[in-house]
Image 1 (cartoon, rainbow, N blue to C red):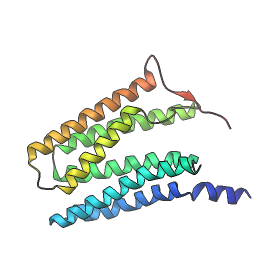
Image 2: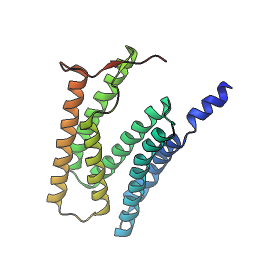
Image 3: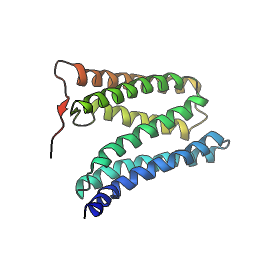
Image 4: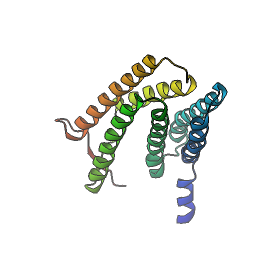
Length: 193
């Protein structure tokens, strides 16, 4: 009986969609890094668009059909972060200005990872993503996919997009610093079931 319940929690539609998003990443990276023609960049962009759409759908399915699981609470944001990292890394190989975005992204996410682990060990956690983090994720996905879809953009426009991404990353980073260390910390005890 416990095995059946365990499988039921693991093999939910939202979790499978998150795994699908992760499986798309090597396909995207291979196509993007080897793309020469515009249609190849279009295919790479479409793969990432499908990934983003499944990200929108999996949370709605989880809430609507009561398929929220502990694994899903870990897998969904992990798939988001790995997808963002893959996009930024691939783009930074083509656009030097994206290397600063990659550096800030890594610092912010390593901070969140370390503080998340430290708090989990204390039986505490943030109750969910902050609004600034959600807005940042949306801005990143839109701008990064645009850079994939339009590989011939003027370098000044690419630099502007990189700066916008860095501003949103910085705002998100500061928001998480305050969430962990601010006067009105948002860290809560993990509810016991």
